[in-house]
Length: 152
Picture 1: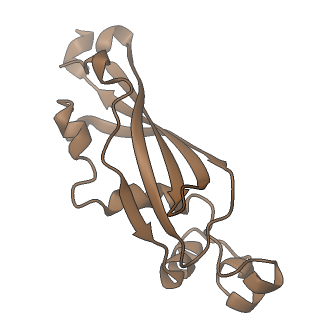
Picture 2: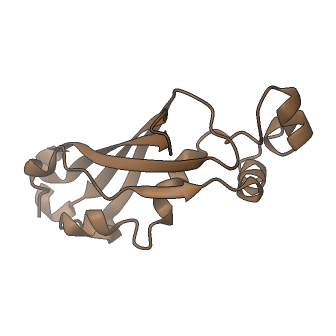
Picture 3: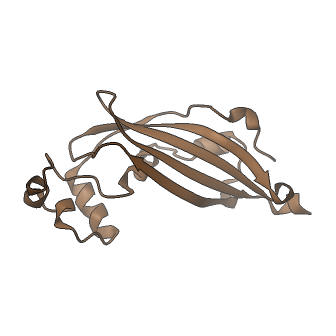
């Protein structure tokens, strides 16, 4: 079933998270980040940060903290077994650090199909802000939905 383009511009439920230093260290190690500024508080402070900074791509995971982080896709009628992660991009406006309370507010940016509907693309944009409203980053992800029966 094709995704209804009338969902473009729909704001999805926001997710708020307090950034934990232990999670930042674990994430930095998991992605192979070797710069000590991401794992050692003294190195972070020597580099001018108030605490451990958020490693690259970490902010993508904030929305995954929702109890059902993919419910919005199911609400659109998307069969989650046919979903692929197509693309991810980040525009950083400031550096988040451990202890920051961040809110990710996602919006459906665009919906379109290719190959006669066999592939559908859902663009989701998210603004990540601090508790005071300051913009930390803008994220964009592209979800690809395979619809093999549509191409026949």
